[in-house]
Amino acid sequence: MSSITFPSNNLSFMSSASSFEHEPHSHTPSFDNVSDGFRMNPLSHHPPRTPRQSVTGSSSVYGTDVYNKLDETPETKTMYEEDSEDEDEKARAEAEGRVRKEEIWRDLLTTSNGRDKALKIMQYSLRMCLIFHRGVTATSFLKSRKSSSWETDILKRFESTANGFSLTRRCLILFNWLVPLTSIMEQHSTATVSTASPSKKRKGKPLLHTLLNSPPPVLLDLLCSAADDVYTFHRLGMIGPKLGEHAGRVADWCWFAGTLVNLVENTVERGVILNLQHEVESRLYTESMSGQTAKSNPTANKIDDKELVRLQKQDFWIQVTRLKLLMDLIFVSYNVFRLNRAKRPVQTITGLAAALLSTAKLYDRHKAALIKATKH
Figure (tube, rainbow, N blue to C red):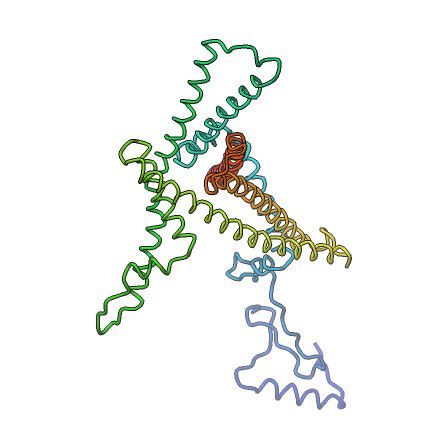
Protein backbone atom coordinates (compact mmCIF):
# COMPACT_ATOMS: atom_id res chain seq x y z
CA MET A 1 0.00 0.00 0.00
CA SER A 2 1.34 3.38 -0.98
CA SER A 3 1.86 5.93 1.74
CA ILE A 4 -0.18 9.08 2.01
CA THR A 5 1.68 12.34 1.85
CA PHE A 6 0.38 15.54 3.50
CA PRO A 7 0.51 18.90 1.83
CA SER A 8 3.05 21.42 2.98
CA ASN A 9 0.48 23.87 4.22
CA ASN A 10 -0.45 21.46 7.05
CA LEU A 11 2.98 21.54 8.71
CA SER A 12 1.66 23.69 11.50
CA PHE A 13 -0.97 21.12 12.30
CA MET A 14 1.62 18.30 12.33
CA SER A 15 3.95 20.21 14.57
CA SER A 16 1.17 20.90 17.03
CA ALA A 17 0.13 17.25 16.92
CA SER A 18 3.69 16.11 17.53
CA SER A 19 3.97 18.47 20.47
CA PHE A 20 0.68 17.04 21.78
CA GLU A 21 2.08 13.49 21.58
CA HIS A 22 5.12 14.41 23.64
CA GLU A 23 3.17 15.90 26.61
CA PRO A 24 3.78 14.03 29.82
CA HIS A 25 1.13 11.44 30.84
CA SER A 26 -0.67 11.84 27.52
CA HIS A 27 -1.52 9.24 24.97
CA THR A 28 -3.51 8.94 21.80
CA PRO A 29 -7.12 7.98 22.38
CA SER A 30 -8.07 4.57 21.14
CA PHE A 31 -11.38 2.81 20.71
CA ASP A 32 -9.83 -0.38 22.12
CA ASN A 33 -9.59 1.20 25.58
CA VAL A 34 -12.83 3.02 26.28
CA SER A 35 -12.07 3.53 29.93
CA ASP A 36 -9.26 5.95 29.05
CA GLY A 37 -11.91 8.58 28.32
CA PHE A 38 -12.22 11.25 25.69
CA ARG A 39 -9.85 14.22 25.52
CA MET A 40 -10.95 17.55 24.08
CA ASN A 41 -9.11 18.96 21.11
CA PRO A 42 -7.03 21.85 22.45
CA LEU A 43 -7.44 23.75 19.17
CA SER A 44 -11.22 23.79 19.48
CA HIS A 45 -12.85 27.19 19.73
CA HIS A 46 -15.72 25.81 21.94
CA PRO A 47 -14.86 25.36 25.62
CA PRO A 48 -16.23 22.31 27.36
CA ARG A 49 -19.67 22.77 28.92
CA THR A 50 -20.20 22.43 32.65
CA PRO A 51 -22.02 19.18 33.28
CA ARG A 52 -25.46 19.48 34.86
CA GLN A 53 -26.38 17.61 38.02
CA SER A 54 -28.60 14.67 37.35
CA VAL A 55 -32.15 14.72 38.63
CA THR A 56 -31.84 11.19 39.89
CA GLY A 57 -28.63 12.11 41.62
CA SER A 58 -30.49 14.88 43.47
CA SER A 59 -33.28 12.68 44.74
CA SER A 60 -33.72 11.68 48.34
CA VAL A 61 -33.02 8.08 47.36
CA TYR A 62 -29.42 8.96 46.50
CA GLY A 63 -28.74 11.00 49.57
CA THR A 64 -29.90 14.54 48.73
CA ASP A 65 -33.06 16.43 49.58
CA VAL A 66 -34.50 17.70 46.32
CA TYR A 67 -37.95 16.37 47.17
CA ASN A 68 -37.80 17.88 50.64
CA LYS A 69 -37.04 21.25 49.07
CA LEU A 70 -40.06 20.89 46.85
CA ASP A 71 -42.18 20.29 49.96
CA GLU A 72 -41.10 23.60 51.48
CA THR A 73 -42.71 25.82 48.87
CA PRO A 74 -45.45 28.21 50.10
CA GLU A 75 -48.07 26.59 47.91
CA THR A 76 -47.33 23.16 49.36
CA LYS A 77 -47.35 24.51 52.91
CA THR A 78 -50.73 26.16 52.32
CA MET A 79 -52.09 22.95 50.89
CA TYR A 80 -50.88 20.94 53.88
CA GLU A 81 -52.27 23.50 56.34
CA GLU A 82 -55.66 23.42 54.63
CA ASP A 83 -55.67 19.62 54.71
CA SER A 84 -54.78 19.56 58.41
CA GLU A 85 -57.48 22.14 59.21
CA ASP A 86 -60.06 20.17 57.26
CA GLU A 87 -59.02 17.02 59.09
CA ASP A 88 -59.34 18.80 62.45
CA GLU A 89 -62.80 20.08 61.59
CA LYS A 90 -63.86 16.65 60.39
CA ALA A 91 -62.48 15.01 63.55
CA ARG A 92 -64.25 17.58 65.74
CA ALA A 93 -67.55 17.00 63.92
CA GLU A 94 -67.20 13.24 64.36
CA ALA A 95 -66.30 13.64 68.05
CA GLU A 96 -69.28 15.95 68.59
CA GLY A 97 -71.55 13.35 67.02
CA ARG A 98 -70.22 10.63 69.31
CA VAL A 99 -70.74 12.65 72.51
CA ARG A 100 -74.19 12.02 73.97
CA LYS A 101 -76.22 14.27 76.24
CA GLU A 102 -76.34 11.60 78.92
CA GLU A 103 -72.55 11.57 79.11
CA ILE A 104 -72.44 15.35 79.50
CA TRP A 105 -74.99 15.29 82.33
CA ARG A 106 -73.12 12.40 83.96
CA ASP A 107 -69.87 14.35 84.03
CA LEU A 108 -71.66 17.54 85.11
CA LEU A 109 -73.40 15.87 88.06
CA THR A 110 -70.20 14.24 89.32
CA THR A 111 -68.96 17.69 90.40
CA SER A 112 -70.23 19.54 93.46
CA ASN A 113 -70.85 22.63 91.33
CA GLY A 114 -73.00 20.62 88.91
CA ARG A 115 -75.04 19.08 91.72
CA ASP A 116 -75.52 22.52 93.24
CA LYS A 117 -76.93 23.86 89.95
CA ALA A 118 -79.22 20.85 89.49
CA LEU A 119 -80.60 21.14 93.03
CA LYS A 120 -81.02 24.90 92.58
CA ILE A 121 -83.19 24.33 89.50
CA MET A 122 -85.31 21.81 91.41
CA GLN A 123 -85.58 24.11 94.43
CA TYR A 124 -86.78 27.16 92.55
CA SER A 125 -88.99 25.12 90.23
CA LEU A 126 -90.88 23.90 93.32
CA ARG A 127 -91.08 27.46 94.63
CA MET A 128 -92.41 28.57 91.24
CA CYS A 129 -95.15 25.92 91.45
CA LEU A 130 -96.07 27.16 94.93
CA ILE A 131 -96.27 30.77 93.74
CA PHE A 132 -98.38 29.76 90.76
CA HIS A 133 -100.73 27.81 93.03
CA ARG A 134 -101.12 30.73 95.41
CA GLY A 135 -101.79 33.04 92.47
CA VAL A 136 -104.49 30.74 91.17
CA THR A 137 -106.17 30.30 94.54
CA ALA A 138 -106.13 34.07 95.05
CA THR A 139 -108.37 34.74 92.02
CA SER A 140 -111.90 35.93 92.54
CA PHE A 141 -113.72 32.78 91.45
CA LEU A 142 -111.66 30.55 93.77
CA LYS A 143 -111.68 32.70 96.91
CA SER A 144 -114.69 30.93 98.36
CA ARG A 145 -113.32 27.47 97.61
CA LYS A 146 -111.48 25.79 100.46
CA SER A 147 -108.47 23.68 99.67
CA SER A 148 -108.76 20.00 100.43
CA SER A 149 -106.62 18.19 102.97
CA TRP A 150 -104.54 16.36 100.36
CA GLU A 151 -103.85 19.60 98.51
CA THR A 152 -102.67 21.26 101.71
CA ASP A 153 -100.47 18.27 102.47
CA ILE A 154 -98.85 18.42 99.01
CA LEU A 155 -98.15 22.14 99.38
CA LYS A 156 -96.51 21.54 102.75
CA ARG A 157 -94.39 18.75 101.27
CA PHE A 158 -93.30 21.00 98.39
CA GLU A 159 -92.32 23.74 100.82
CA SER A 160 -90.37 21.31 103.00
CA THR A 161 -88.63 19.81 99.97
CA ALA A 162 -87.59 23.23 98.69
CA ASN A 163 -86.15 24.10 102.11
CA GLY A 164 -84.33 20.77 102.15
CA PHE A 165 -82.81 21.49 98.74
CA SER A 166 -81.63 24.87 100.03
CA LEU A 167 -79.90 23.32 103.04
CA THR A 168 -78.38 20.57 100.89
CA ARG A 169 -76.94 23.14 98.52
CA ARG A 170 -75.39 24.98 101.43
CA CYS A 171 -73.78 21.75 102.64
CA LEU A 172 -72.36 21.12 99.15
CA ILE A 173 -70.47 24.42 99.16
CA LEU A 174 -69.01 24.02 102.65
CA PHE A 175 -65.30 24.85 103.00
CA ASN A 176 -65.22 26.82 99.74
CA TRP A 177 -63.06 29.35 101.59
CA LEU A 178 -60.12 26.97 101.05
CA VAL A 179 -59.88 28.06 97.40
CA PRO A 180 -59.15 31.79 98.03
CA LEU A 181 -57.08 30.89 101.11
CA THR A 182 -54.86 28.64 98.99
CA SER A 183 -54.21 31.41 96.48
CA ILE A 184 -53.35 33.83 99.31
CA MET A 185 -50.94 31.30 100.86
CA GLU A 186 -49.24 30.76 97.49
CA GLN A 187 -48.84 34.51 97.12
CA HIS A 188 -47.40 34.70 100.65
CA SER A 189 -44.88 31.90 100.01
CA THR A 190 -43.81 33.51 96.72
CA ALA A 191 -43.27 36.87 98.42
CA THR A 192 -41.26 35.21 101.21
CA VAL A 193 -38.95 33.44 98.74
CA SER A 194 -38.41 36.60 96.68
CA THR A 195 -37.48 38.71 99.72
CA ALA A 196 -35.11 36.14 101.19
CA SER A 197 -31.38 36.89 100.73
CA PRO A 198 -29.08 34.05 99.59
CA SER A 199 -26.37 34.98 102.11
CA LYS A 200 -28.57 35.97 105.07
CA LYS A 201 -31.95 34.53 105.94
CA ARG A 202 -34.53 37.19 106.70
CA LYS A 203 -38.02 36.87 107.99
CA GLY A 204 -40.58 37.39 105.24
CA LYS A 205 -43.65 39.57 105.43
CA PRO A 206 -46.31 38.38 107.89
CA LEU A 207 -49.35 36.54 106.60
CA LEU A 208 -51.65 39.35 107.72
CA HIS A 209 -49.76 41.78 105.46
CA THR A 210 -50.19 39.43 102.48
CA LEU A 211 -53.86 38.96 103.38
CA LEU A 212 -54.55 42.69 103.45
CA ASN A 213 -52.66 43.26 100.18
CA SER A 214 -54.57 40.54 98.32
CA PRO A 215 -56.95 41.53 95.49
CA PRO A 216 -60.40 42.66 96.69
CA PRO A 217 -62.30 39.89 94.82
CA VAL A 218 -60.19 37.23 96.58
CA LEU A 219 -60.82 38.80 99.99
CA LEU A 220 -64.55 39.08 99.29
CA ASP A 221 -64.67 35.44 98.22
CA LEU A 222 -62.82 34.36 101.37
CA LEU A 223 -65.03 36.37 103.71
CA CYS A 224 -68.25 35.38 101.93
CA SER A 225 -67.40 31.66 102.00
CA ALA A 226 -66.47 31.76 105.69
CA ALA A 227 -69.67 33.62 106.61
CA ASP A 228 -71.73 31.19 104.52
CA ASP A 229 -70.25 28.26 106.44
CA VAL A 230 -71.13 29.87 109.79
CA TYR A 231 -74.70 30.46 108.60
CA THR A 232 -74.91 26.85 107.35
CA PHE A 233 -73.84 25.55 110.76
CA HIS A 234 -76.57 27.74 112.26
CA ARG A 235 -79.12 26.15 109.90
CA LEU A 236 -77.85 22.73 111.00
CA GLY A 237 -78.32 23.66 114.66
CA MET A 238 -74.67 23.81 115.68
CA ILE A 239 -74.53 27.61 116.20
CA GLY A 240 -76.97 29.91 117.93
CA PRO A 241 -79.40 32.14 116.04
CA LYS A 242 -77.74 35.44 116.93
CA LEU A 243 -74.32 34.56 115.48
CA GLY A 244 -75.94 32.77 112.56
CA GLU A 245 -78.05 35.78 111.57
CA HIS A 246 -75.05 38.11 111.75
CA ALA A 247 -73.04 35.72 109.57
CA GLY A 248 -75.90 35.61 107.07
CA ARG A 249 -75.93 39.41 106.85
CA VAL A 250 -72.16 39.51 106.28
CA ALA A 251 -72.45 36.83 103.58
CA ASP A 252 -75.20 38.79 101.81
CA TRP A 253 -73.18 42.02 101.82
CA CYS A 254 -70.09 40.20 100.50
CA TRP A 255 -72.21 38.56 97.80
CA PHE A 256 -73.65 41.94 96.83
CA ALA A 257 -70.20 43.60 96.62
CA GLY A 258 -68.66 40.65 94.79
CA THR A 259 -71.48 40.69 92.23
CA LEU A 260 -70.86 44.38 91.54
CA VAL A 261 -67.12 43.72 91.08
CA ASN A 262 -67.86 40.83 88.71
CA LEU A 263 -70.22 43.02 86.69
CA VAL A 264 -67.49 45.64 86.25
CA GLU A 265 -64.99 42.97 85.18
CA ASN A 266 -67.57 41.49 82.82
CA THR A 267 -68.16 44.89 81.20
CA VAL A 268 -64.43 45.48 80.71
CA GLU A 269 -63.94 42.00 79.27
CA ARG A 270 -66.81 42.45 76.83
CA GLY A 271 -65.34 45.76 75.69
CA VAL A 272 -62.05 44.04 74.86
CA ILE A 273 -63.84 41.24 72.99
CA LEU A 274 -65.91 43.74 70.99
CA ASN A 275 -62.78 45.66 70.00
CA LEU A 276 -61.08 42.48 68.79
CA GLN A 277 -64.23 41.48 66.93
CA HIS A 278 -64.37 44.91 65.26
CA GLU A 279 -60.73 44.57 64.15
CA VAL A 280 -61.36 41.17 62.56
CA GLU A 281 -64.50 42.40 60.81
CA SER A 282 -62.64 45.47 59.53
CA ARG A 283 -59.85 43.29 58.20
CA LEU A 284 -62.30 41.01 56.41
CA TYR A 285 -64.11 44.02 54.93
CA THR A 286 -60.82 45.55 53.74
CA GLU A 287 -59.79 42.28 52.11
CA SER A 288 -63.15 41.94 50.37
CA MET A 289 -62.98 45.52 49.08
CA SER A 290 -59.41 45.05 47.81
CA GLY A 291 -60.47 42.08 45.68
CA GLN A 292 -59.07 39.30 47.86
CA THR A 293 -61.31 36.29 48.12
CA ALA A 294 -61.17 32.94 49.81
CA LYS A 295 -59.59 31.49 46.67
CA SER A 296 -56.87 34.11 46.32
CA ASN A 297 -55.89 34.09 50.01
CA PRO A 298 -57.49 31.01 51.59
CA THR A 299 -55.32 30.75 54.72
CA ALA A 300 -55.84 34.33 55.92
CA ASN A 301 -59.58 34.20 55.28
CA LYS A 302 -59.96 30.94 57.14
CA ILE A 303 -58.00 32.24 60.12
CA ASP A 304 -60.07 35.43 60.26
CA ASP A 305 -63.35 33.52 59.90
CA LYS A 306 -62.44 31.14 62.72
CA GLU A 307 -61.29 34.00 64.92
CA LEU A 308 -64.55 35.86 64.29
CA VAL A 309 -66.63 32.79 65.17
CA ARG A 310 -64.59 32.25 68.35
CA LEU A 311 -64.99 35.88 69.43
CA GLN A 312 -68.73 35.84 68.74
CA LYS A 313 -69.16 32.70 70.83
CA GLN A 314 -67.08 34.21 73.63
CA ASP A 315 -69.16 37.39 73.53
CA PHE A 316 -72.35 35.31 73.73
CA TRP A 317 -71.24 33.57 76.93
CA ILE A 318 -70.05 36.87 78.39
CA GLN A 319 -73.56 38.24 77.89
CA VAL A 320 -75.02 35.11 79.50
CA THR A 321 -72.72 35.63 82.48
CA ARG A 322 -73.75 39.29 82.75
CA LEU A 323 -77.44 38.36 82.72
CA LYS A 324 -76.82 35.79 85.45
CA LEU A 325 -74.96 38.38 87.54
CA LEU A 326 -77.88 40.80 87.15
CA MET A 327 -80.27 38.11 88.42
CA ASP A 328 -78.00 37.52 91.42
CA LEU A 329 -77.83 41.26 92.08
CA ILE A 330 -81.62 41.58 92.13
CA PHE A 331 -81.93 38.51 94.35
CA VAL A 332 -79.39 39.60 96.97
CA SER A 333 -80.60 43.22 96.97
CA TYR A 334 -83.83 42.11 98.64
CA ASN A 335 -81.80 40.55 101.49
CA VAL A 336 -79.27 43.38 101.80
CA PHE A 337 -81.74 46.26 101.80
CA ARG A 338 -84.51 44.20 103.48
CA LEU A 339 -87.08 44.78 100.79
CA ASN A 340 -90.43 43.05 101.31
CA ARG A 341 -92.55 44.15 98.34
CA ALA A 342 -93.02 41.12 96.03
CA LYS A 343 -89.96 39.52 97.62
CA ARG A 344 -90.98 35.89 97.24
CA PRO A 345 -91.99 35.93 93.53
CA VAL A 346 -89.09 38.18 92.49
CA GLN A 347 -86.48 36.07 94.28
CA THR A 348 -88.02 32.88 92.90
CA ILE A 349 -87.97 34.11 89.29
CA THR A 350 -84.45 35.57 89.50
CA GLY A 351 -83.13 32.49 91.34
CA LEU A 352 -84.56 30.11 88.72
CA ALA A 353 -83.24 32.27 85.85
CA ALA A 354 -79.76 32.43 87.40
CA ALA A 355 -79.79 28.64 87.92
CA LEU A 356 -80.75 27.97 84.28
CA LEU A 357 -78.13 30.38 82.89
CA SER A 358 -75.28 29.06 85.03
CA THR A 359 -76.25 25.46 84.24
CA ALA A 360 -76.24 26.19 80.51
CA LYS A 361 -72.73 27.65 80.76
CA LEU A 362 -71.49 24.70 82.83
CA TYR A 363 -73.11 22.26 80.39
CA ASP A 364 -71.31 23.88 77.44
CA ARG A 365 -67.98 23.69 79.30
CA HIS A 366 -68.37 19.97 80.02
CA LYS A 367 -69.48 19.34 76.45
CA ALA A 368 -66.37 21.05 75.05
CA ALA A 369 -64.15 19.02 77.39
CA LEU A 370 -65.78 15.74 76.32
CA ILE A 371 -65.47 16.61 72.61
CA LYS A 372 -61.79 17.42 73.09
CA ALA A 373 -61.17 14.16 74.96
CA THR A 374 -63.04 12.12 72.34
CA LYS A 375 -61.19 13.76 69.46
CA HIS A 376 -57.78 12.91 70.92
